[in-house]
Length: 163
Ligand SMILES: CC(C)(COP(=O)(O)OP(=O)(O)OC[C@H]1O[C@@H](n2cnc3c(N)ncnc32)[C@H](O)[C@@H]1OP(=O)(O)O)[C@@H](O)C(=O)NCCC(=O)NCCS
Image 1: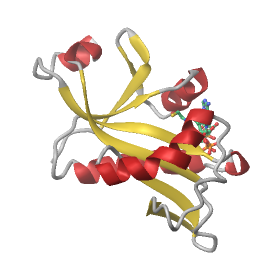
Image 2 (image 1 turned 180 degrees about the vertical axis):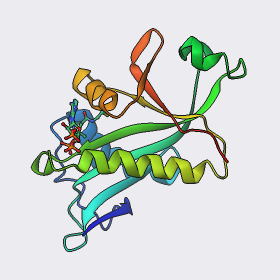
Image 3 (image 1 turned 180 degrees about the horizontal axis):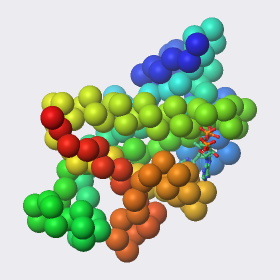
């Protein structure tokens, strides 16, 4: 069974994770646990319950904001004219061995769920992401993210109205 866990340096085998993108590997191998301790980002990994040390994929989230003018006119005219509070999906990757099985989709869904939970306590308009390349940009477009104005590698997904 798939499980989402908070990254733990002692528990998860970070060094064998390989998503084929060196900066995303390096982040998990060297920085993620430190950033988590320092309150820079929260990092969650996806594992199989039977082999919990093997990281299938991971994502990181942090607080963020986006400039009001970076949002399309139709969206920004409904919002106050100052930086708009958001969450940032800083990094998301699936190990090459486990690609094409829907795990990327699972990770996006889990990240959105976390943002919705966090938003019950701290307001945020959208989840932002900085795509590293056009393949990543296409992946996020596939999930309905909208490119920011004049900065199409930064995309956002509105979290919807609160009740
Ligand atoms: C992008 C990535 C996370 C996708 O992981 P994955 O587990 O292979 O993707 P999934 O199997 O969950 O694919 C889910 C859907 O996304 C689509 N998809 C996957 N990669 C895509 C891409 N680059 N562009 C467009 N659609 C894509 C799949 O076709 C699938 O569509 P469907 O649900 O209609 O069948 C993975 O390729 C990866 O880790 N890449 C390197 C790191 C990276 O680029 N991260 C994102 C930017 S930080």
